[in-house]
Image (cartoon, rainbow over all chains, first blue to last red; front, top):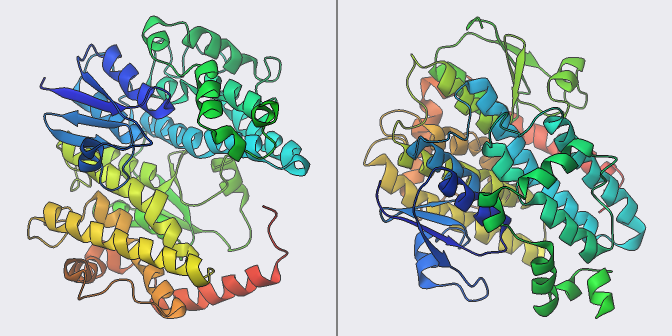
Length: 227
Length: 231
């Protein structure tokens, strides 16, 4: 169904969502690797508003913002639907997708970057958000039910990012005892072949942050202090 | 589920609540508006939106739907006999969702911070908002195709997402003593704003600027009197 390109970066949790969605639907695409420290003219042309990845380009027409791209992919290629048809269930998936991006990821970063005297509270706040995700997956194989769905792809690389943030910030966020359902889901999810092929690994994230010097910008970073 | 059992939890001043009301009006849906008291949260709100504890919440039958843009899409998908809010073409829908996300994630947060900011920070925020308006002007030119709205002849998703923010834009201009929406720079948007506010689905739910100004002054005073937030 036309020519598909993905402009992305391998460590981005937003980009891998897009690639997973395309692979699940059997869509062939060309992957264009972007160097975020030196943005290409092609990225600036296709996403002039944000100048960010991922960008999906379908027959020369760009779509930006990972959640927008996921819905576009789901509507364009009908195999292995990601979102439920029922408007209420769809709304629930959309609600939680925004929650993951606005609360889980942000609060985990905040906990990682928090000053010593604020760390405990920041970690509690991050864990509160994770607790809600844990409840959501309780008793289910996937967030999407029996098969991988929209929310699975959105939550997807969170476990690996959390491991990375734990090491970067010297904190503990995920607890198999506290969040047993989330823990079970993450163990299974990262082993699925399509997912495993392209998922940011904690070691790669740590490596990127330490070699780029970004670790030093994180106050009290366990990694920065070890260098 | 009975299509006619619809409630909306909201407050009159909220642009996000306004989005839901405009959408329900477009679809000619009868609903009960349950106004929350500013400064306190009802049991129904806490039960229906335990995650964020915020308005708007649409309650259809006994099922709550939260987050304004999620609600607007839900309304569009359930009441299919009324005019469409999102385009039927999936590329155009992606564009509409993109701009709505831009407004909520970048443009509005910058605009609402102008009044509380000072000096260089304030100027940066103003610049961001004005640049954003230039982008929206360009988008309007492209998507309206010479018609009155981003959605063409009728109000669509971008119109609702952006138009609902006009009231607070005017408050920021008045109280912040800054010109943001400028006829010289964004003539298309100025005309669009007039058409939007005059639309039948919008008129009855667009708060008067004067009332918003008073409300905003009250809020600022409360915030100044409150202990400083812990960062």
